[in-house]
Image (cartoon, rainbow, N blue to C red; front, side, top):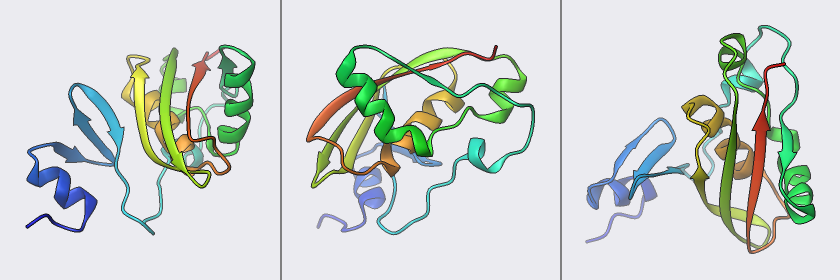
Length: 139
């Protein structure tokens, strides 16, 4: 019997799941239960003033970036350490709401990747599929 809970379903398939992430075929995938609040340390933390992440890519990616911008912030601890990088996230949405989000290119820092996963997971009015590039620069 297949479990109804998506996290239990992933565990039943032998997928490592924890802290909002699952590793599927070497790709970090966001995992959130329906109705469960998303936590973003970057939005909840106080610390050094960091520049806002910026968009990379073409015009379509800039428009997608605008859709996630409200839920996106530089993770305070990563900024304090001077961590920088570019994250490329891919998503699939139904009725404008994302149901699958994957990191296609990692920044090399899990905190930056996670901030983008959360921002895309919170977005609304998204097209059926898309890819967004986010650049984090500490200065």
